[in-house]
Length: 431
Image 1 (cartoon, rainbow, N blue to C red):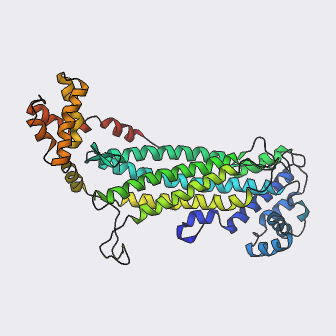
Image 2: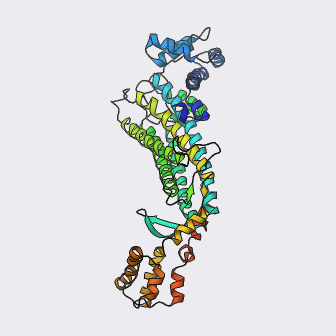
Image 3: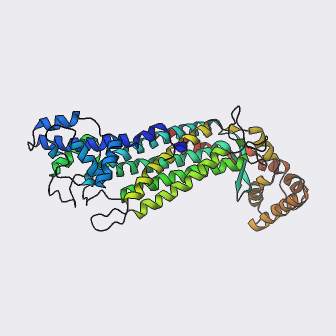
């Protein structure tokens, strides 16, 4: 993780100091499990529990000699107690420590992400309910379609965030596992009771059939949940970017006092947060690909996954953490120009109400194709020559709707009359 995109809580999870502290906790719990079994004296466990944390600087210096990070750690940890150091790492392989500790780190990282999703959900839902009756143009293919409301647009964001939360919660449970089963997962040198003791106290699950490692489909699931959440954020950000375009101007990111939108053009107010989130989401999808590649390892384990996940796991969690926090601030401070939304609806010259007229003509007894052609002819003339769709239909002898019927067709309320069902569902939705 680079500092620019790192927030303190997530950075602390992946710091070397914290990682080594969790490694020490795993090793200590194993010693305590052996002591509980009566294999070693409890004084050894007590000494290790009170021993100082391994210093990251000393650890790196020792690794220059061992060329093995866990072996260097074990050397320093064993040497930190006066007697009983020979029991440190007894019956373990490196992955027992690494993967069990990673289960803790990934759980804690996931919990931070779930908290961010809860915050974003609350902000989006509240903003949606605030604007449930704020009419605006709905667009398909980037072209005017039919009236919708800004609240309805935000409501479908909120439901997507809820799905992201559920996926992340499931992935959190999938990665929050450990294993203390030895070199190839046979429990040859440590009984299953040691594993149960350690994982129970760490409050993580147990890999039910490990090899030398916990299996990487778990991390792939987690990274895919991260990537999907990032893709949701990109969808929201892309919408904001389009709505902020000068020609549209319906919403815009907040702009702080003293902020500069461009180093060259003083008039600029750019959607920088949305664009930043869009870029981050591209990285997150890349990390999901890394997670998939890490699933297929040789036999009981190789280390082709090791270098990749040392980068992918802290970076992916850190980037999503940053993006979620930024999106929450963006939506919370979003400037919604309801007057511009109304002006843009008016600027469609009534074209966005065309389907209502089509259906009214069908109800009158016209064939669907005939009704379509009547409305389309007036609509194309409105596009090409100006005027309004309603005036052209009123003047068209083939359109036999009354003025009162036409009036009803060109009502925004007609298009939003059934949307309460969505907001009722949203108000009932909880994480």
